[in-house]
Length: 254
Image (cartoon, rainbow, N blue to C red):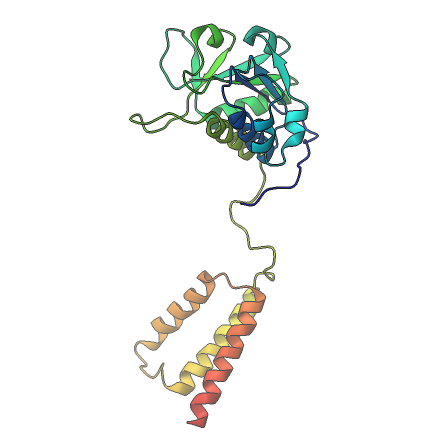
């Protein structure tokens, strides 16, 4: 992927991403990029190790400047979440605290619901090396755990942000799960497919391919079903007509 042009913040209300004691400016920048990819633009930092602003974060953000420009810095988790009604804390480990633990997918659905009710929501991510501590977790009402390989479950903080942000984006997305590419012509109508099959059947009869009278009915049905499954576009159907016509002409010229 090439360097993106500068992105813009979305106008809709989204959860606040809170990075607690992040250690590397590059990770902050990559997290900002991941956020904006998924329509999030509100970032808060708690006691970043290398201070703020950070040139390395700027370079790693690859155009997500709007996120960095609006980033707020706090001395403590308590201060960073003070104006929020809901806080979700990401964790990869079992802890002494008793909290409801959600998958990213379920958390995304609930966050959409909370925001729809007018509540402000924040999602906490811990430092790269240690993750969130219990003193951080107590500020959250819900925990989020990403189900990964139990033998190797560590994630870079930017990866974790991307995964959670992507679930947020897809939970509210209305894009069809399957669609034709934008440059494709419209799907062929059933009448156009029937005309195509009639053309194909005539050509196969003329070539002698369907000469077996006993097998002909099942062969015809299978070929017709195949064309239906192909999900042809109008342009593809016309191309197929041309192929049949050319092959039929070539056969007659032999």
